Length: 145
Image (tube, rainbow, N blue to C red; front, side, top):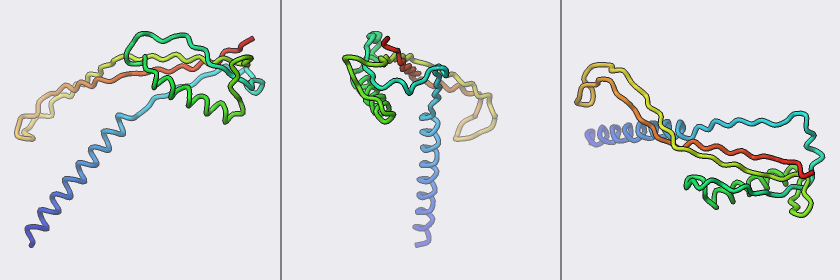
């Protein structure tokens, strides 16, 4: 009975440690760097209607995706409607244009060797390679007049 408790505690400790490592790694992976900018001299309260204008997207398979475009348009529509605007394709005050970009990126990190035996091998210097997709979304509001 005592042996069973020790085994259960080790299993629980290993599971909790595994969950902690997983959460730490996924939190770092989901970090988002967002920047915004707009013309501070423009009075946005005068705009009441909007329409979408498509300028075409590059033939890059990463961003040439109708599902992504539909979700982006839906999210922007929701926010503009919350601000009191309405969609009007015939006589809009502003046109909304989106520009999407994505490219494959690689981060290379060098870890100098700490020296010593760990995990049944010698821990010398190491190189970590992290590949990811860096995306850019630009939403332009262009006056129709």
